[in-house]
Image (cartoon, rainbow, N blue to C red):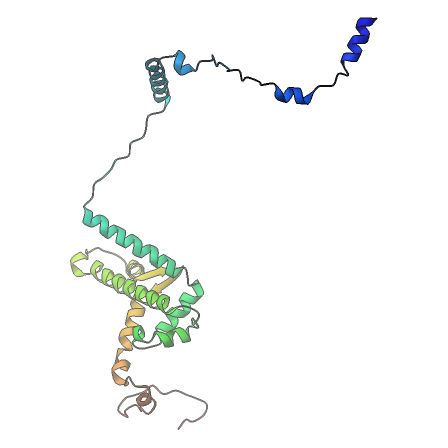
Length: 238
């Protein structure tokens, strides 16, 4: 009975904090007796194992497909890069115009003499004032150069030196003639290159006839020697 009573009272003992602070606790050194794999396995054995694993992975890979590399002249590479850059730049410019806008631009382009120097009037007539001046100029130069190149190429293809004599019916001749009409295609818009170049050529005399100054243009009158096709209007014009 006494032992059980002492055990019960011992649970309510009060610790003396002052005495615990006076005691000096000496730190015990913890000895780490664990070893790493670097200490157990020598470096030479580990390197050998890594090499064997790498060789097995390399052997399991499928064979690489080697592409044939062709060497070109540095000058031709530079030309190709320039052409590619020019084409990509023109694609960006052409994307600024819709199909309907290009049709209206071509229609207005044929109205004016010396169209390359009258882009302001062409832009107003085609209702493209929201487009930048640079885009209009690049579009004009691109269409003009492409039409010239296409017409020149068509002339070379139909020259007597390249013409081969063959027996064909008149129907075949007309079909071949239609096929040989030089055209260019921009944004699903087919442009007759010959018609556009001829319109510029036909209106060239107007450029030489009229003065460049606007004030002189207003007071200019056609010479009486020029024959003008009569227009049958419903009322007389003085």
